[in-house]
Image (cartoon, rainbow, N blue to C red):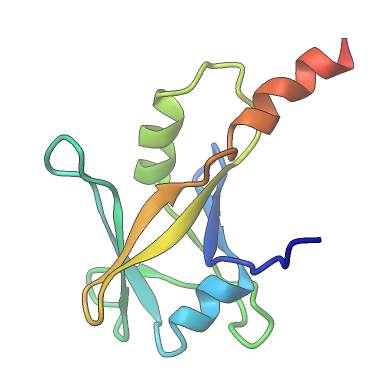
Length: 125
């Protein structure tokens, strides 16, 4: 049986709520806020940059010691869900991939993050 190593992930909901899993929270132990930078050229991805000060950034809420940190990101949710069918009901799962030691993280869609949501209605029929 393969060993499961959880990866740092975000769960993005259509209403703009974003939850960080415990692994993602542990990557940013001193962050009080994050900056979300949209792609600027084709082939680039959204970036998440942890910040120690909330000035000009999105404030994190929740308890990092419990791994339930969250924030609101309406622009991220709107951009991601715009590329999906309107009947797509589930959340999207994104992995945090380190850019470099001090730069932050790229948000990369998990390979099957949407697929199981597309299959759910068909399996119910």
